[in-house]
Image 1: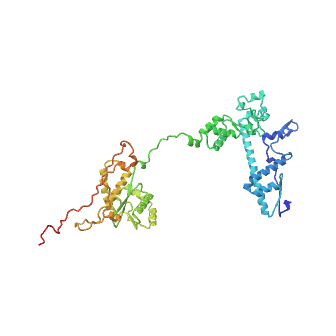
Image 2 (image 1 turned 135 degrees about the vertical axis):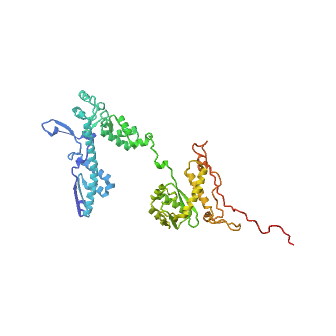
Image 3 (image 1 turned 90 degrees about the horizontal axis):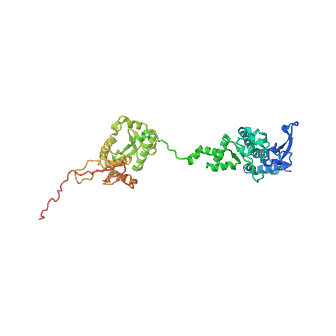
Length: 507
């Protein structure tokens, strides 16, 4: 009745459905039949066992129905409830009859059902392919043993007592395993567990040949499944998969020894010979970037580790963060700097001027370059550079022939900045009643007497406080004695007081 209920009818059939359901090896003894050898009636009659459920067999319809419904239940989540209902309610063995309201619904229902059943069939075909590969491998590894008729005719699980068979296996890898060949042509371990209530593969595990590429692949597969654990866990996983690896202890150990992830996880640390230091590591260089205010003549020095555009932009960001926004930036082109050093000029040429201009433009600042070879355009900062060099030369002379480190250089630059900014920007007054002249530091800090560099000795432990806990002198480290000799500008002469110079009588 469901077939004629809706407008669109569906009638389908599953081709060779009985051959899609295989008989497990332990049940094949119950599906035996007699037939002529090689289907030749002139030859002897032999006993055969069914590997699949034939349609003419009595239990086959029940097996097919159960298998279809189990497949539908497993595929419901992926292919939908309608496909499951179609298989469970509208199929009789391999025939399906149903109806839907529209043709599109019928097409969708049949498509999903086909995909659901094909997925299960693909898994079965994969198992068949695996069995075919195993048979081919075993034939190549145990060719002489597999041609032995006594071995081929041996009943699964039966213990062999024939002297001829024992003689044929003498010297073979299979000699101590009491092997037999199952209905799929796979060589399995024999033994005395035929009556044990265990799974077939557990009683008769498949034999993996020694030193064969397939055995190596099996070891790698299960070793990866256990997340690169040791030999004991890997061998146990192989055994749990119903495999018997000949020479397994040595093969697993050898494979784990060459496993790269295992070496990274548990291998000994490898000591490598260190390469030569690069040139930039052997020659430590620092550059000083000088900012000069064209109005107040204040300076700002920033120490840089490179002369690329990125380092220069970082210095600009530090300058803007400390000193505030800037309206105009003027700079020479790098060929007219102090000393005209070729190395410094080449380093400045590598700076990305476009990138720098974009950065300063985003901060509301105008960037102007002086014409090349016109040092007179930058007389303000060229004069400041000369003053900085004289102060820095004096500091380095006091330091002596010792190693100049980055921290010491940064400290020197900060002190040079304080000394140069403390200079008056006007002539010192000769009259005591005149106010003190302004200095760049006064304009920056809005203090009449801005603090200069500290008047004390800086020792190495002060620059490196984490070394105070070290006992005894540190080899190769000299005590740094830096005395800041910043002297305030004093009045050259004293003007005598002319008001009421002496006591007189009021009468």
